[in-house]
Length: 122
Length: 107
Image (cartoon, rainbow over all chains, first blue to last red; front, side, top):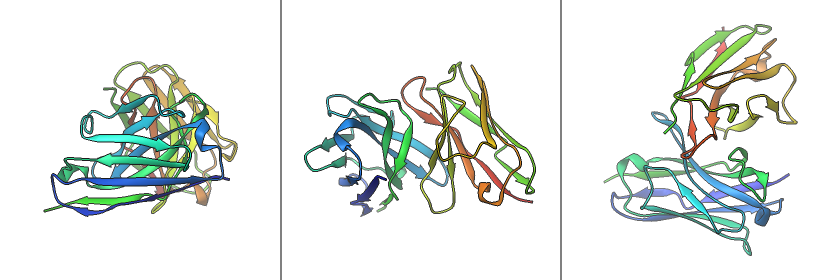
């Protein structure tokens, strides 16, 4: 049974940066695509970004494109989300999630971390 | 972007009831729809993929159906552990999007 643990959340001022990490264990991390999904009480669940199993392709939601970068280190079984130019509306719980598909993203999330809170506030 | 509208946004049910949740897409998504269950303070759990394929942990009282723009999640004989919030999510096109959620609580 696999496990995902996010870290790096916190309180940050608008315009600043933050990097989230997601440590994976218990499954072959280098064989699965990964995603970041965020959740707010007001806007519900929002897909943020994904990355292929080998790190060669990425996609982003419209609201974060050009500001956030997803990456992964398969040697360390770790997923990252670099968040720049943070805005008030980026305040959310950020989850990392494993893709259901083996070596090909199927865009369903079959394992989630516990989430890390990001608060953007002046 | 494809918008997903869930209805109702909340409902109250008694143990043993049959519950139906609808997810309406702003354009046809065939059966490229997944369903999740989320309990308070927890991450969502994948329930159904491809509109109707149950994950291995999911009891057979759950079912998914539909295609195109109108898809449904049905829970027959609701049990106490089923009281939760349910979300649909489309994978027909990027960006991936979620419905607003349906909270099922105890009547």
